[in-house]
Image 1 (tube, rainbow, N blue to C red):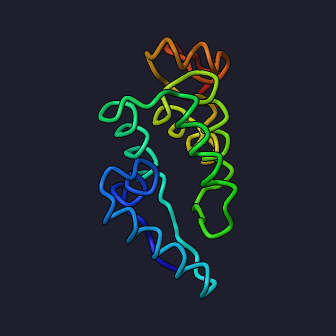
Image 2: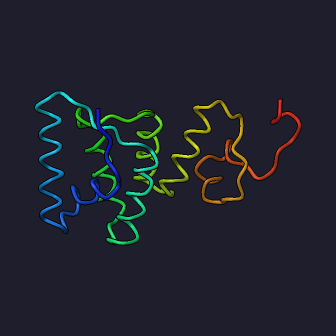
Length: 139
């Protein structure tokens, strides 16, 4: 198994540096030929989405397609595929990818509530992301 950094994913998608994009494509082909997995860490995906949005001005639809492609390609593996897949599905509709991934990880870890002042998260997860807790929420 090998791991990819954000810059490798961005080169693969944007191809703004042809030489680096070709190297990434060669690494992916080599991994496929040798039945190796390429692990994509959640932190790398968070950074990748941020770079695509803020630096390259990619829209939500294009980023969602890229996430779907990564998740459906057998060469790529993810430590929390279910959490990442759920975050990607929510992101396609609305929300910040990093926040969605963080909430998903909190759920996976068994947190009963997600304490946050983020109004957007509260709208997406009205019974989970809250800014007020009572005694029953703590038990």
